Length: 463
Ligand code: NDP
Picture 1 (cartoon, rainbow, N blue to C red):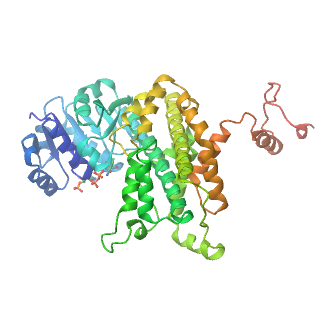
Picture 2: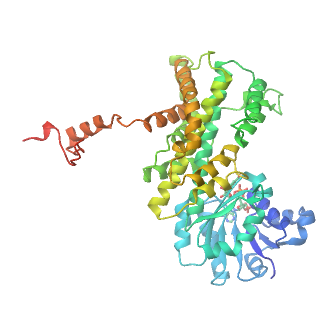
Picture 3: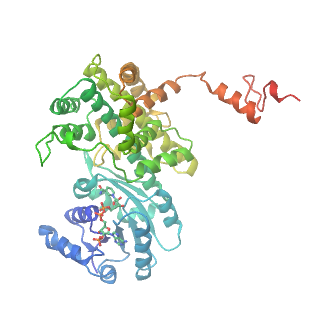
């Protein structure tokens, strides 16, 4: 009964997290639904075995942990979490803490925190298996005093950026899982924008995969330096194990998804927070999966992307930079909307800080975002001194990329929506006057007159 913490669910993430916790010097008791998995995990623990107590029943798990207990759940999000909580609670003392480290929907976490069944934290963990094993980015949600009980463990296992742990409490209730969700939405858009530029290099410039890999590797030494650019280069260079052909040439271009991008988009709509780049990225994944219809379209209209040149690599790099900044601006604005709507106080600059290492969207640009959001709190990232200067320098390139791509049949849903966001966000007199006129015409919805009067109508309202 002296383990510092317990963990349930020794799958990909749970096993990696348990090993990480043990490695950082905390005694941990573990349990898995399928007992053999627990035994295998303990058998291969090596040097860490002394800190790991494998257990084969929930009762034994609970008995192995020091009071007040803390138990991490790393099981699939949704019903499995509720079922696990229901099975565990009757075995626990009133002040024992359950911590869900899976990818829960933040509304489920809100509900579980509010439920009177006992102390609960919802913690978003990013970085995949490698991150979980050696240092993830950790976004906590729930009561501060509960977070304080495990903060030493969370900061010890988290990634470090120049010594600063990438772990923090985001706010009450589902705040941690909300921030993790937006992280994943940004991840979708960042990945999609890179894929769009890859398409121009491949089908527009006719570059081979190795040369494309070289471009990404080169960009990874500049302002675009990031984990996603780095792995894009590695993916482009990789060869198929079965045939030796370039790996990308044998991957069916139909993107999978587990839903966090979709959650981000749906939630953004509820918050009236514009995240068009993220929406475009989710739509692009959905469309990509329609292989038969796309084949039909090519049969009917001919393939869209045509070979072209006229975009040099610097223009593409700058266009991608502009797109990336606009996508992150949208993500942070969504976090601001949640702060406003939920009465949270999401620590914007701290969020950028804990995304600098450990998570999938880690990048050197996030370093600048952290200091910028600190210096100019509450300002849309695109209007901050630092990023406005970069956008002034790069939005022309983004326009070139989008224009040339459109003329040559290359679809750029995320990059072009980023450009539309940019242009709408710098236009005082847009075109919603027409929309308001139409709404008033057919529904007498009224409009605000430029003289300041509300509830005004057009001539059709008379009589
Ligand atoms: P795995 O499928 O690898 O492992 C799932 C684990 O949960 C297994 O230990 C399994 O036990 C257990 N389990 C499944 N269903 C139940 C149930 N009904 N009751 C009790 N235990 C159950 O999943 P991951 O480790 O990949 O994911 C775990 C969580 O982490 C998910 O919420 C996921 O979204 C999240 N996550 C995953 C990331 C990743 O890169 N994979 C990144 C960040 C978060 P058994 O051995 O008996 O099947």
